[in-house]
Structure formats: C-alpha cells, structure tokens
Length: 282
Image (cartoon, rainbow, N blue to C red; front, side, top):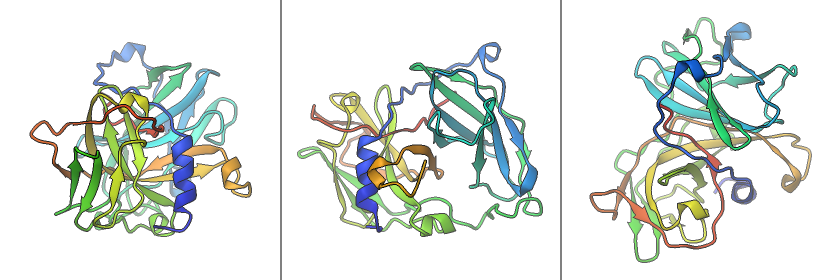
C-alpha cells in the first residue's frame, strides 16, 4: 500500500458524491454553450462558463475523436474547484497523447439536477506544440491482461487474481494517484478505493457500498487511477476540502463468479459514497 493510502481511503469514504447515470438523448437546443479550449502555454485548458450559483459540482468528459470513445476525466467541486474570474472556471487536461484529437463536454450538477454543455471544438495534439503531452507508447492506464476479479457471492467479496500493471507516468509513480474500482448500479456509477492491487487482495463489498448500491444489480466496469487535489495541503488531512478529482482512462477487467449476467447483488448494509464517475453520457 502506498504511503498515506490509509488517510486517503478515509477521505474517499467520507467525501463521496452520488451520481445518477443513464443513457441520455441530447437535444442540442437545450444544452449550455460549449466550453472553450485554450491551447496557449503548450497546455490544454478548458474554459468553463459559470452558469448558476447553485452548481454543486461539474463533471468533465473527453472524447477521443479517433475512436469515438468518451471517458470521464474529472470532477470539479464547486465553488472550490478551479481558479476563476467570477465568469469562468479553468481546468487543465494533462493526460493527452501526441497524434490524438479530442473534444470536451461538461456536465453541471445544479441544485441536484444535471445539465450538459455542447461538445467543444476539436483539438489535435502535436508533440511539437505540447511540452507535457504523452506518446502512444506511454502507459497511462492499468494493464489487466490475464487478470480477473473473483466474486464470492457467499460473503460478497471481490478477490484480485493475477498481476495488474500500474500506469507509469510520473504523477502516478509519485503517489498522487490511487487505484479505484468502477461499480455501476441501475441508477449510479461510482469509484471505490482498492486497498491494494496485489494478487490475492480481497475487497469486502458489505459495509463499503452506499444505500443506492444495495439490493440492486451491480456491474463492475473496470479499474481507474484517481487523484484528489485539495484546497490547502498545509492543513491537517482531515480538514482539507477537495477541489478536484482527476481520473485516468479506465481499463476493463474480467469478473468471474457472476454468471452469464455479469451482475452482482449485495444485501442491505451500511456503506459509504464513492466519487461521481459518469461513464455514459450519450
């Protein structure tokens, strides 16, 4: 377990945010204006308009135009999430690769309801223009080839079988990111902390999952790296407020012991919230 992991698991346990996620059809006439994309200073910065003082948090999505794959890359915790000029938020996307083209969309949680923006302009990443971009050969995700998660329905645990290879980009290696399991219920998708990714690690679901994840069918969607950015690192850890939650791209992982349905049902127990991770946006 990485240094400080136990403290971060404590924060993850008590600072979760609920997500209601479903397949949505968008009417472009009812969407907020697209976020701006700033390519200055050799970095990709999203310029996100402030639209409502009742905004609770924002999700940021990135779409790889080469594959049409959409991933959740950040949760921005309003009003502490970003540097702003009282009109716009700003968010820097660092996990970009040379030769790829991306566009972005934002989802606002405003007073408990969700509102989306249109997709941003498409940007093409070129190493000659971005000092910090990565190359195709760089490993920004977990590697799960030959790995499985074994579900034990008698005690509702998940056991890792096999060797998971961690991402090897600098920020992950310096203990900024932590491995998380993506679990989806009928109405929500959240990330939950893995105490370790070593083979043989067992994750008890009883007592971990929040109420909306109990007595309902669950699907394990994969594993993702998660980083939390706080308002003031000089404060005691228990007094810090989360400004941003940043995710790597997710990696699928095989699940055994769940039958052909690939579904899990965990009976009612007290649990805790995970972070709002929306995997389906259109």
